[in-house]
Image (cartoon, rainbow, N blue to C red):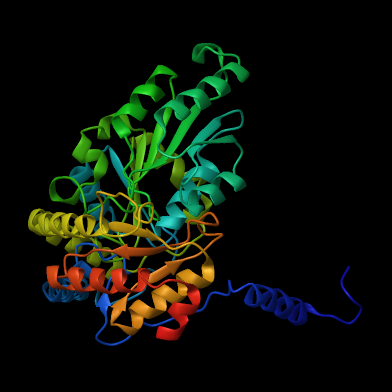
Length: 413
């Protein structure tokens, strides 16, 4: 019960202090000048590509000149929701480009990947539907499910047998077979998991889903750009795109810009513009964002192969060096997302601080973001990293991991 005279500000202060005492208080930081980037999601280096920046500026200038000739006006903002004044032929042409590139009937742009996933899982599943989801799916999916109308059931991460058991269980409880059941079964997956770097066994999971008549939805946030011809993603690399109901591709990671799109059948596009409230009631992305998406896709398509090849080389070097670390401390990942287990929030933060002082921008992932005891260094490899940087990072990691205790580590900081 709140004490008399305690207001909202005091309540918030007490909550923040409680988190501070537990060592879990988040804060905003800025990467130090000159430090090597091993933390950002800019896998292909497009966010810092100078030619892409010039391409965006040139496309913006061309568009604005044409607009001025046609209307006598040069605008910056989108001015409203897509359903009001925030739509344009350029916006729609960009969605057509995305749907053609990714081999889908439609593409619908959202302001962020979080918005896209939340809208999809909050408003797509109908009453009586059941969503079976990988236990490590992103918070945006979970938040959407929490706000939605479907029943939900998790299954063990990347475990095909666990998916089968979960689907069998909900099918039985929902009066199987599918033809006699009112609701739909939906399977929610990521293609590449952000905290572990694991890639989903999509072909096998599609096999199981099809046995139960379930629709599969995947989040390609961390697969876009990194995998597939031209950066089309993990589903494309495995050749299973047409076995999926829909995909979420985001543009703020491998593509290097901002925004996201849901790709799927045309009826999904029509449904979402009528029922997805984050889309309906949000001001749409401004022109500069749409121009950036189009230009970034052109750059990605033209240069994905050499960028992906360099990433694979860095991953191979990193994984080989991991063999020198104590058993059980390294995560196995074929993606640019790598992880080294450093149990304990304080210890993990100390190790990350040691590496940052050595000039490596490496971040600690603490519990409860990951389960207690699996706190880790999340290390991201990029096209703009060199082999020398990766080896130097691993030299520093071997040094700090060899220290005998937290006390020994503290004395070296």
